[in-house]
Image 1 (cartoon, helix red, strand yellow):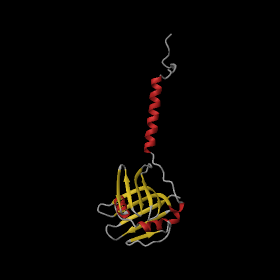
Image 2 (tube, helix red, strand yellow; image 1 turned 180 degrees about the vertical axis):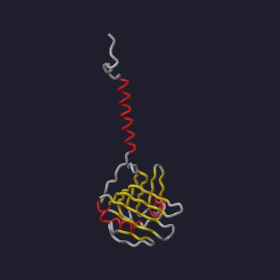
Image 3 (cartoon, rainbow, N blue to C red; image 1 turned 30 degrees about the vertical axis):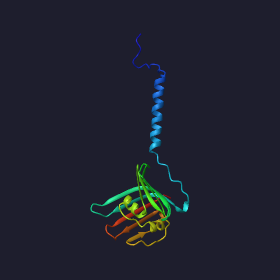
Image 4 (cartoon, one colour; image 1 turned 60 degrees about the vertical axis):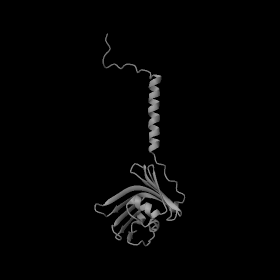
Length: 177
């Protein structure tokens, strides 16, 4: 009698070579996933740590935009900021001390005595760094040419607009709560 085409054949035991291939594939996948993962910033002081999303639009012709997740800690004098893609990989890391600043993007690193210059290189415009830390804390602070709206700070929203000097810029921040 001929076996029916619908009859299942007994499963073969995987060979040693087959098991090695599966193990190698699983190990390769795990290493690839670990290589893409971005270590999260460890907050040193909860009162000087913020995370969320930011969008910056420079009002040129044509406009330039940057939108990213971020983690920020420290102060205008010393700190660290990481910009993250929507899937959580690091786009850039900016670190600064009173002695200078460093911007790392992929394998490239740029050092500068000026945080302001590296911030502009990263975002496309100069941001009011000292005022920004005050705004994140929910406090009004003057920044020449900038107008900030903190009316939605309790809901984790900050918006600011620079009208002068040209080109203008819009900054929107949505903090994680």
